[in-house]
Amino acid sequence: MWSIVRSVLAALIGVQKNQRREEDFTSGRPAAFIITGVIITLMFVLILMMLANYAAR
Image (cartoon, rainbow, N blue to C red; front, side):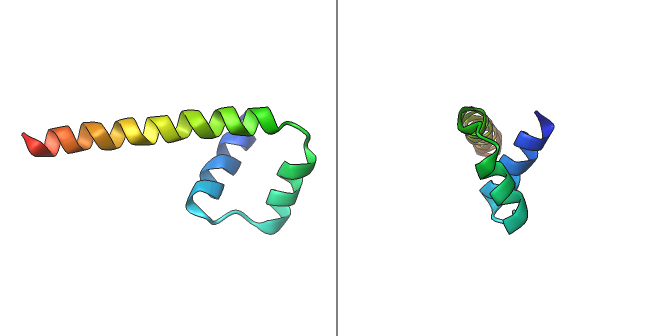
C-alpha cells in the first residue's frame, strides 16, 4: 500500500524514476493506482480550500 502511495505522490509532482514507473505498469493493479490518485487529489484540494478559507479570515 505504501509503495502505491509513494508512486502516486512521485508521479503527481513529476519526479518518479523510469524504472519505478515501469514496475508500476507491469504490476497489473491499475485500479489501486487510480483510487489512490483520486483520494490523494481530493485531499490536496480540500487542504487548499481550508488554507484559502483560513487566509481569507
